[in-house]
Length: 119
Image (cartoon, rainbow, N blue to C red; front, side, top):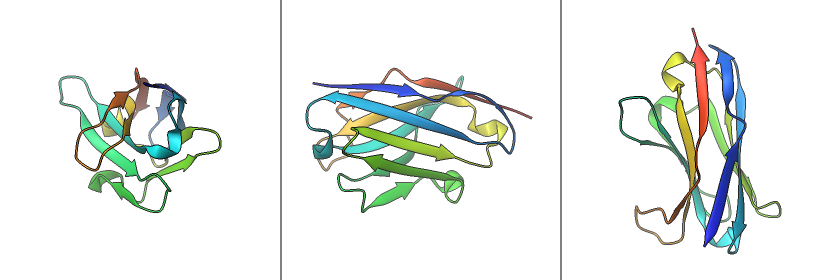
């Protein structure tokens, strides 16, 4: 089992920044690729960013590329999502997730942290 706890959400004005953190405990953190997802009210959960186990491979949802940056610190068992130039459409509950295999499925999920961007 892997336990994931997100933090760092909050209310910010458009154009502002937030840094989300996701602390992992349980199994060996470096064995897992990590992802960030988000779910806005009335919408399905969507992929935001993914970082592989070593941090050498990163992918982003197109609309956040250039504004968001995912990173990880395997020594601290933590993955981060730096969000800059935030827009009201970024408002959502943000979740981190851990992926052990190479397929699309994520094995463990956090409880989520709310991000609200006011216009």
